[in-house]
Length: 138
Image 1 (tube, rainbow, N blue to C red):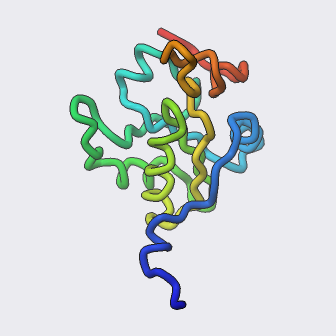
Image 2 (image 1 turned 90 degrees about the horizontal axis):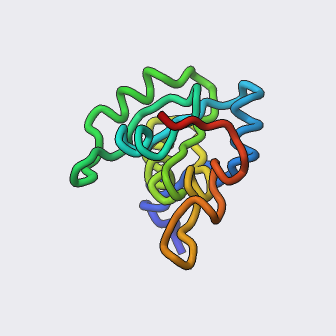
């Protein structure tokens, strides 16, 4: 059976845990890119030193028309790109887009806030914050 031409469109380097992403970032092997909206970073918290490039924009969550240009300007050639969103879902779509731009892209599992708990609230079930990794809230 011939390979599906669309397979390449949906590929990216893979998923990594927040702890692995933090290790790569701290070692200088990768750049951490927060793809959440400005509002999410402002209201929920942010990672100091991460590059902020929204993949989608509020309201409506339309694709950011400046995403490609902003990302390529911010990421040095040859660096892995670690993508962080709220839950680890949006970062997959962003990783696929970044791969199309010719970079090695990884989605951070569970995102910044993790999965919802039994009360449909985030922040107590996985994610960057729960792992005790650096973050701030304004």
